[in-house]
Length: 285
Ligand SMILES: C[S@@+](CC[C@H](N)C(=O)[O-])C[C@H]1O[C@@H](n2cnc3c(N)ncnc32)[C@H](O)[C@@H]1O
Image (tube, rainbow, N blue to C red; front, top):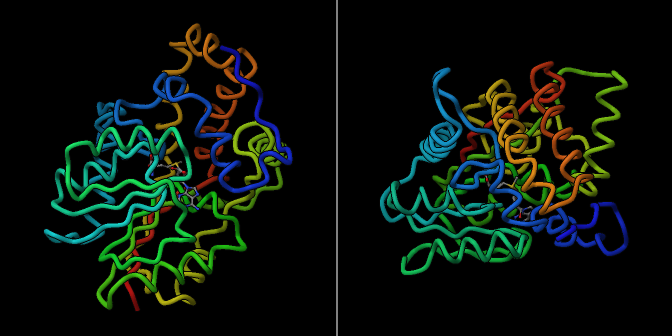
């Protein structure tokens, strides 16, 4: 099956449309390069021998550990992807979880993970319409999609649904060291046209902290995982190259080449420091 290229068009103007243009390309295509949990965010490699699969579980536990979860808590996972972190939180950290995604394919996959389990609830819904009370929030790799105009509203919404002792772990790509290089600018443009339609430059970490502080949160811990993201992208690119034939059968040569460029150059710019990735542990102020 040939899949058409991802280019901005009126059809993609809605936010659901922009998200689905990327994440609903084909689940099988993503299985060719992600780990078995289909986690699509920076992993945490604890040693040079760690595999991608081990490092993804380590990242989930690192993030969930920062949330100070207690048995019976209700956790909101904003941008749950294919459900790996939500499932880990439910099965290994003893909490009820609501996971939100805008992708139809991801939602379908998540529902199959939740079959027969109580307290694991996946919804095809944006945070913008979610107003239920929760005890903790985790959001990994989704803030990148919200757009600057919505950042303050995101923090406000999260603050309004958390209790006085609430904690949120926000994991997001951030702007690295100032760059005027032509290659970085060209790459950002390529991403916004070919890979993540409508994407834009991420905010500097200082800006994320400033917005969190102005909207009811106290940042209590900030950690960069920059070199872990470079290694994650290396693993993804290697996996995809190793399955080139099937990738081209599923998505066509143009998309395969675009993904190799996307994953390879992401690794390069995380290594150069022009891109960064941070985990912000935020306590209700
Ligand atoms: C890069 S994926 C990360 C998925 C997952 N957290 C992980 O680590 O694998 C980004 C996720 O954010 C979700 N997303 C984007 N905008 C959203 C919004 N406004 N509300 C809820 N989820 C959103 C997408 O549907 C997708 O599931």
